[in-house]
Length: 115
Image (cartoon, rainbow, N blue to C red):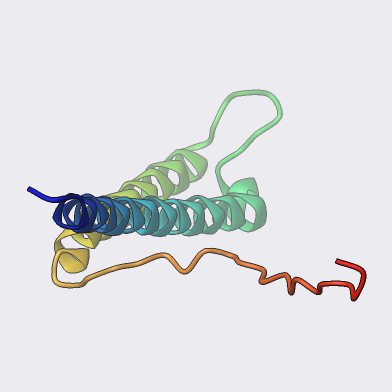
């Protein structure tokens, strides 16, 4: 195999790997965003409604216990649905070719008349 064919094959392999790495990178970013959304939603619920099931002395009333159980069910549902969507990301991305457009800067080269 001559050098030009070897170089073309090497370039093709690099491009294939780059696309696979780009897809993996996007998958990780999307999964993290879904996870952040789920945790943020749960945090907002706890922050605004936590008084319904929290008590300073540690003893919960029957109503507080019922609210805490309801919150735990909702929390579990939110996490299950979010995790299911996060798992679906890879199946969805499998239908696409992904290429990360990295940040790039083109610097002009200006030659001085002295050179």
